[in-house]
Amino acid sequence: MEQNISEVLVLEEGQTPPPGTTMPPRQSRWDDTFSYIANPDRFCRDNLRKYGPIFNTGVFGGTTIFVGSARANQMVFNGDLQYTEIALPNTTMDMFGEYSLFQRPDLHRQRKSALRLGLTGRFLEGYIPYINQAIAHGLQNWNVPARIKLYPEVEKICFDLLTPLLLGVKLDDSDRQTFEGLSLSSKAELKALYKTYFDGFYGLWRWNSPLTAYGRGMKARTKLLEFMRAAIQHRKSAEEKINPTTDFLAMMLASQKENPNGVFSDALIENQCLLQLWASDYEISGLISSLIYQLGRYPEVLKKLRKEQVEIKSEQGNFRSFSVEQLKQMVFLEATIKETLRTLPPSSTAKRRLTKSVVLDGVLYAKGCSVMAEPRLAHIMAEHFPEPDRFVPERFLAPRNEGKMYEFIPFGGGVHACLGAQMAMVVTKIFAAHILHLFDWQLTQEATFVQFPLKKLKDDYEISLQKCESVT
Ligand code: HEM
Image (cartoon, rainbow, N blue to C red; front, top):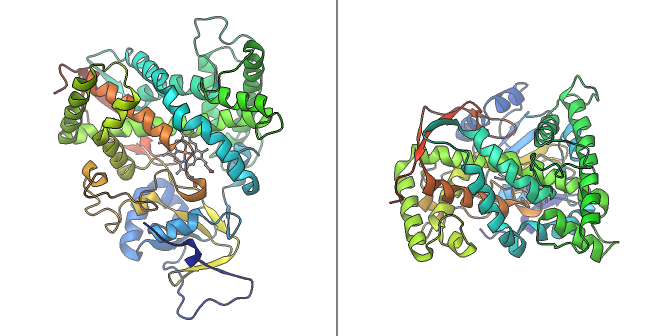
């Protein structure tokens, strides 16, 4: 959708809005935060029906204006340094640390374009053989026939895949050298620390004590940074010439060597490794398990996906490892992943606080309020996605071509759009292609989801899994 951001009227101090400007509807309520956290889907759906795609809430304190329409989303996503600032709780910002892309808007563009190299384009394509191998290896442990706990089993594979790729650390407990000199001694220890770190992001009190999620999270963060510091030194001393395309850490270390005064200080590198793993493991695991769940609900979509795999296989003959070319041909699979992201978006976007009042399309967004672009609104608006309650991957393909910029926002948009979106799509595609060849599965019951902070299947949700006899 083409639209001009200059249409956003930014009001200077004391300037009055044009005549006819209105306020967003709905009064904030004291229990909005509870209602939203308990069930964000229902909160968004009910209010969209009553008030339309822009309305006031009291979610997370003060007035937070929820928006879902494409034009308002674009306004929210592009206000950095002009009329918005990131407005996450202090606890979350402490957990991110000073090197997160949500801090320092003045350095954001420079840091982001330097980091992008290691997560996109030819670097990402170079990771594909490794991603295939890690998924194939992980899926060997899915013994069939069996009932498996879907999310934890997917997450195990994603963690084993993403840690070496982003932290540049091998995860082989049986090899004594793996953790030598690294301040942690096992994969389980690393994983447990990560979990504590993750939980710390959503601690409610900024009380640095072992009694609070925040305090435990901050301690885990310190330990993880120590671990990364050692891993970086280890890598620097072990490799004379670092190949930048091996993994994300190698990309940053090679760049640092080439330009010691550039973006990549040791501190930035340590922090980015942690943050990228934080940003990816749970999100990608959530997406893959939701995709498997949706395919269990819609067998006709599964059938079409298997047909697409047969056509691809017959051209290339290899279905143990999918090439870049083969992945490009999986257009229906890509559309199905997008439809999963539309119907079960893993996360909302961050809140932004308005540092100035702005007017867009006759609506005043007042200074001091917060704004939040919500995929749970944008993705169920019939103006963006006709018949939004139907699961129809074809909507993302010609001739429908739905899912336009700022209407489809699972990865946010604008200046803070997700840095790992391409990587998430590639990992999910390869994972899906493997299981389409290896397994048949049935749902055991209707799923229940954890809704907040990320939408994901509950850990105890099981599917029943068998060997796939033939991909037809
Ligand atoms: C299904 C997977 C993923 C989903 C749904 C997702 C979602 C999002 C969303 C909604 C935002 C925007 C937040 C905002 O503007 O308020 C975001 C930003 C970000 N994501 Fe992701 N993400 C995923 C995977 C990843 C991966 C794999 C990485 C890195 C390896 C990553 C790294 C980042 C970073 C660094 C940002 C901040 C970008 C900036 O501030 O400029 N994400 N993500």
